[in-house]
Image 1 (tube, rainbow, N blue to C red):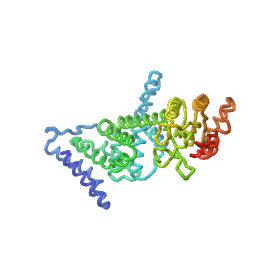
Image 2 (cartoon, rainbow, N blue to C red):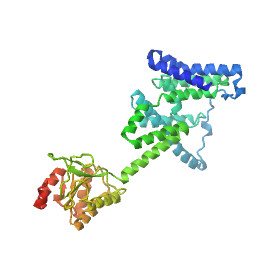
Image 3 (cartoon, rainbow, N blue to C red):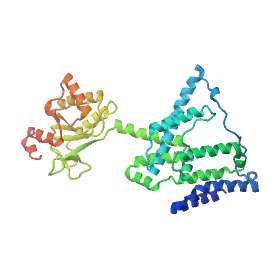
Image 4 (cartoon, one colour):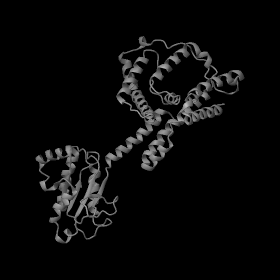
Length: 400
């Protein structure tokens, strides 16, 4: 039975997609499925043949429960802990579901308004015997698949549910659960965007992994667990990016004053005597150790990278800080310690284009410790190379 109604619902949806004027076919198919399946089970006594049905449901509206609220001290701790966890999960699910449908219908979702709406809904619901709820994915999918365009559909739905609770509950006693599942499956299938998933695979394999975890987690576990797994993996990715920022060796594109990543531009050439590095992340306490080790390794390996002469002598370490948008006190200490380490090696540290907040903090630290000279700060890499090339011996400067 379930398979037959699933095929019927998918066929109705396909007809509505091919012929938009027949939108009512897809909108009315779930109702027709419920009515027909209920009649079939009732006539043929399907509940006696292994078909799971809803069964007897209590009639009437939920009673008021505001007088049952307790604010005694012994309850507050449990309420706060439980409320914090359920609140985070509810908001995460509600906003994620809202943004999913916003992307399909090309409109914006205000996260603050969503939070206020969910909070107000649960506060009012707690006074009317309701359990904690949010913008459920399955019900939102069914609403979307039925052709709902605005929030007014929720008012219609609420009135329908109220009338059903008051007068129509006995009619659903023989409704098979498998048909309700078919309605949800049909609605969810319409939300699966295979071309977008393939595009994510082509662009970023890690993001595709997050996409798969969220998809299978929601399908086989629950919406909350699926979203939690996806969010957890995403946070892990962010932590990896913070603690292991990208640093690249840069070279000059011949005939220009432009310097780019050697591994991205095959025509880029290394400037003899210069190690030009670009740090492409904020510098903070979480990554200073990694950056220090990484720069030290670049210096030790200098002269053995592809395209560089092994007998070249290193004179300057140039740090392009254009992409360093922020720096904490540990980042300032890192620059100061790096400067001392370069002096011990007989090298000069040059900083290129430290911007905004980064430059202000370096200036304040420099007033106290005087570790940066004026001639080690430049606006562009090209300007730094042109200015410092004259300090290198003539046999190497001729290569610039």
